[in-house]
Image 1 (cartoon, rainbow, N blue to C red):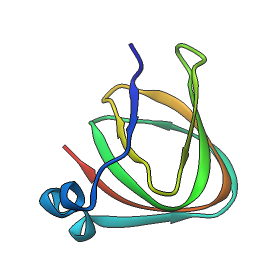
Image 2 (spheres, rainbow, N blue to C red; image 1 turned 90 degrees about the vertical axis):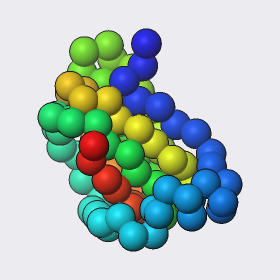
Image 3 (cartoon, one colour; image 1 turned 180 degrees about the horizontal axis):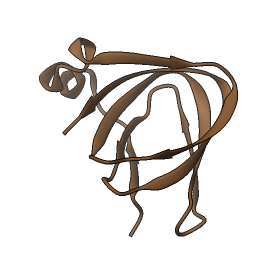
Image 4 (tube, helix red, strand yellow; image 1 turned 180 degrees about the vertical axis):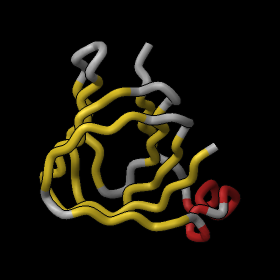
Length: 91
C-alpha cells in the first residue's frame, strides 16, 4: 500500500476542509530527503515535484491542483521540478 495518496477534490471539499486557512509552504527547484513524523495533508497551489518513497522505490508526481496525503513514517526524496507552493496541515 502506498504511503502517498493523491486525489482531486472539488471547490466545495476545499472549502469544507478550510484549506485556504492552512499554512503555506514554498520551495524553489531542488532535491532533498524528508521524513514524515506525522500525517500531512496538502493542496498543491502551483508547481510540480517527484516524490520517491525510499522504502519501496515508488515514484509519484504531484502538481498544481492535487490534494495529497503523506502517511506518518514515510521516508522520501523530494525532487522539485517547478517551484512549488502548497497549503499544508499536519495531523
